[in-house]
Amino acid sequence: MALSCLVLTSLLFLLDQKVNSKWHLDESFTVAVIFILVLSMGSSSMIEEEQYIWHFMTSSLYFLLLRRTMQSIITNGKQNIGSSDSIYSIIVVLICGRILRGWHQGGVNWTYLTDISKILEKAGTVYINSLHLLSVVFIMICLALLLLAKLQKRRFSVVLLLLLVYLFPVLMILTQITTNQDDTRLIQTIYALIGISTVGILVALPWLMPLLDPVSKEYSFGDAVYVIGWCYVSSWSLLQMLLQQPVNSMPTALLLVQILATIRYFSQGGLHIKQWVKVASLYYVGMAGHFGLGNTNTLATIDVAGAFIGISSHSTIISGILMFIITYASPMLALLSMLMDFDVRAFANSEENVDLGHVLKMTLGYPCLVPLVLNSILLVTYTIVLLLMRNHLFVWSVFSPKYMYVCATTACVYIGVSIVALSVTYTCAVFASRRKLNCSTSG
Image (cartoon, rainbow, N blue to C red; front, side, top):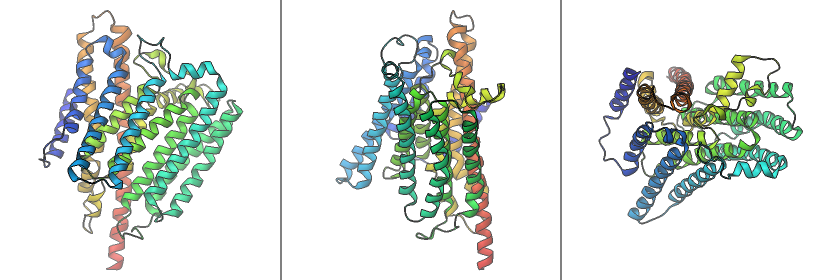
């Protein structure tokens, strides 16, 4: 465990050794966040109220990014559309994060305080179901607008096809919400549609998308990776709308808005933010959102009832998978969304005979290594803490459940990173073979 942590950290440093630029305050704070969290793990009270640490650290990081953006505008002496979009994106992330923090009080010591979820539960199921319907529609509108903004008129047929593919599961989910009954056959149909659509798009899209962009005449590898990431995010969000408790539908939508606003901010490219800072920021948003959905470091907040939605007969494995999907909705969404902000310049700048290893190293290096390094540091640290606290009074009520969550988070990170790596590797291999075939045919 410690050896793997050292190996991953060494690989990350080797990947970044060519960059000798001066570190900015936000970059130093990005590294400091993980060490602040590590130092807090020795206290049982800090473990019980970990959601506050993630919220304040993530908010502070985005305030620093906002500060850097404002400094850039003042230094350049002008404000363009891109800088305005960057400011608005960070403000949206901060506002959504604050609402998420107030949705569930969480923790142990202040659960009796009023929060938004308690107010909605007292108001009645009519308001909760209305928010549930609104959240589904809001999610699809946001995702559709984002796809249109990215591809614009270049791939209108692709955009139209994708929206039609996801229209059917959206209508089924809306039907499920309005009827307010657990129709097992309908839910299983939704599972099948989402699964088949996601896998089908992943397999077929790299072959069907034109090799060259019709407008810029550049390779469409970046658009293909973006669309696959968009499909992952859409499928995962719709799945959460089906599985999460109705009161958690709006927090899920706000979390998606946070992630999309973060990607929008980083895609502006005006500040030349380093790739590892982008990945770490998404990872932090995902972890803060994990607690924003009502999860804590106690086993009592696990949604067991949701793990049996759409199951006609008892299956421990399927129920366990659904429970994992519900609990780690936020970190997995953040990991899958990294495909929507990929650096694909290595493929565009490569020669006719694409060096697949070099391209994958330049595109997958940071998105895979940064989450693995951050998670491995927490895993090794908390393993040491658990060994030191094995005779502590709260070893079974605080430290052991937290260690189970850390291990489950490790599994989540490895699964998410594996999906990202396999998707990019498959897409890159297909485009490389098509590019080579096209060059040999034209030559």
